[in-house]
Length: 546
Image (cartoon, rainbow, N blue to C red; front, side, top):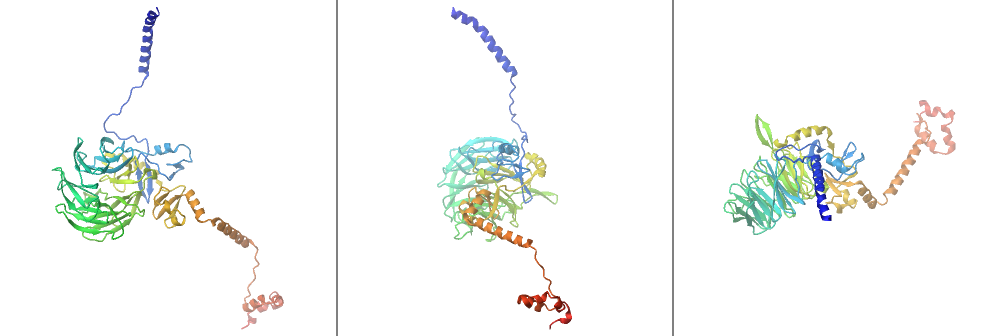
């Protein structure tokens, strides 16, 4: 009986459940999905602009906070704000993410732009992968996982369709448009890779005195080029001359012609100073101009026809030079367009400096925030002012420097945004930080902190937090307060002395020597100066004693 009653009540239960489901569906909002076509990013967030020496640097990165607080009408972009509100919300209000998903889970190692200017290739770690971003869509195009960490890579075509990856397992992996295509292992671990388009060879150098040649037509290694250095750190190639330059860990730079096995030229940068060559770059407009970076933070400009440097530029950070670039943009001359170069961009682990190639005068310094880690690689989009920095942190940093070039065609909206921000640019003023010269750091006992985030290098010194500076000063000068107190006492005594009423004595016009002797004589003789009977002796010139 109970079983039949249960079946009798089921239709009403089903009807109520169906009615509730219909009501929920009618009240629900329709789901909106992004349309996979080109659209400009929503500029609901403002970029952060920093003005240094009259040059504006616009931060287009998602991570726009900096360790020191930059004041802007009482609002700080990092750290607690005096005007109220959370610092995270304030940082989000003034940030803009140009490329969606420009990040890795741990860090990015290399970043390069394709020669056609349409794609950005980035390699990262944990897990090791390579990502491609398409500028027209402002988003990621694909991601490829690899078996080992990518040490360096080169694009073999004008776009992303062909590239060679130098991995940490001594393998050179060649990728095509569809994915992995071929793999070859080198005899020793490689550190850098270059591509010679004339011979269709990938050149790999590393911890050996050889430069291995991978013929991409045959898919096998050819006879290597022999170097005099025990190991080669970097390779650079001149597209106009076809010359290959190798920088060794012994401070020697060698020039090669791939048709010969031995070097055709040799330059010793540091004889016995222990410097390594960490970066080389040829100028795209002047084929004989070569920039060389060392492990001690110095950049030297050379003409291949001379062994003496044209210019030396010191970063004064003590960090090795990571990469060098000759930014080029389109200029007008006589009604025509041409590529013009006037600056060099050199990056070390802490900052990227833009300076004149003719005089060495600094234009601007791009210094990432301390929490972004160290700089691993530098990329400047050809014929534009966009700068990409691969960091030892999840997010890559993107900057726009109008002095280096205009905004690209796909990012023309940046010109309008920067014009709106010109009235609201911020000067680089460190709040709660004090500048300390480099020679004062050991005197304060802070020499062991050089290279850490507690000392931020700037020009010829460092920025130190006020609290750390006060503590170090008290420890290095224990009697400073006592000296300060005695100095204040002396100042107050002198101030009271000036407030006293002083008796001014009239100086006699005649016989001043006699008056001086009488003033220092006995009291009885000194009274002669105040006696009216002898007043004419000191006032009338007729009584002058000769």
